[in-house]
Amino acid sequence: MSENKEKSISKELKEKLFSQRKNGYLRIDAEEEKAVFAFAENYKRFLDIAKTEREAVAEAVRTLESVGFTEYKKGMKLNPGDKIYRNNRGKAIIAAVIGTAPIADGVRLCAAHIDSPRLDLKQNPLYEDTELALFKTHYYGGIKKYQWTTIPLSLHGVVIKADGSTVTVNIGEDESEPVFCVTDLLPHLATEQMTRPATKLIRGEDLNLLIGSMPFREDESSEAVKLNIMNILFDKYGITEDDFISAELEAVPAFKARDIGFDRSLIGGYGHDDRCCAFPALAATVDCVAPVHTAVTVLTDKEETGSDGNTGLRSSYLKYFIEDIAEALGSEGRDVLSASQCLSADVNAAFDPTFADVNERNNCAYVNKGVCITKYTGSRGKSGTSDASAEFAGRIRRLMDSRNVIWQTGELGKVDAGGGGTVAAYIANLNVDTIDMGVPVLSMHAPYEVISKLDLYMAYKAFAAFIAD
Ligand code: MN
Ligand code: MN
Image (cartoon, rainbow, N blue to C red; front, side, top):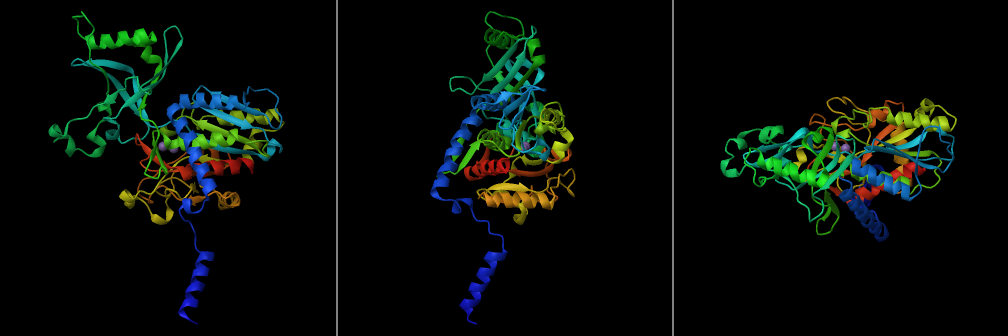
């Protein structure tokens, strides 16, 4: 046998037996590349107008209602093809399209979260120190605190006034509006600061938002700068200092989503985790027509703080919704849940060559290799994991291949490097077959995260395929 012949046999065998996961851009044609880039434009718009869970719900309601979804109340009759949603306190939302199959055959559930790491104002936020006005904050979610200094921040949320009326706040997004920021120490005087471990470089109580410096005119008392700020806030919003007690105000990066790279293949923006899954899941639901199985998409709150609370997925709001539609369609919630399948749609860490050490190269997600399927999460011996069965992983894998979805598999980092969880466990605990699937992210939880347009589009294709199956 000649040397050449041997080579071609091994090449043939490798093609047959080895995993072949090339860069996704080498696996799509020009037409699909166009679709990839077009989808990213819609997504960037969503990122810019939905920076908080409340804004994401408001935008989801607008979108859903514009295509005929109506708010569902317990007891309403349901028929195949009906498009419904339930708004949970303006911070989480469930959308559903009723399928043609009996509801007892289970639903196809996509679950993504719409809260992202940020700086929340404390309930007594406003103070003046040395003639500067500041807001005290309590950070939300897992952040590297030093990343949140010296960047422009906008303020979003609601204030419930003493008379019970609601004021909606959104300031710092329009170019004409002011922004806010957390200051940091100049390097010249940071000799002691720079010796601290990174966790203490900026401490929680250092994350104070600078909001003003002008004293109230003709006022000789102390706290004249604070008084001037409160006066401006009263003029603009009609609020007094005590109204902060019943407010939820969130400081988030004021940057807009932008293309990254000469080739524009990537998107930089705030809150990709988990809007890069929430948006495609919502889009797939909106585009879904007459599915066989009832399609249910939940966009949840509080994932970044552990999913507790009545708008998080450890609460019963999803279960109650399933029970309500089960009853309307003549079945029992527990039977529907037990027959259901779920994609826990959340991001994964993308391999970063600058920080290669934390990953095990055979089992991590890469930019441009498609949506990432993660069979199990958890850390240190799969603690806290939801581990999808081989059977369910096999079903999802076959489905993705049959619909030409470019996908990869990966887990979050090396076994003992750290880890993280998603909402998968809370849905799986309802006896639902659940697997994690999502877009790989660079600089996850930073004020400015990066994803690939191709991976984003493949998430949309994956969710659409799952819903339609
Ligand atoms: Mn997430
Ligand atoms: Mn996260």
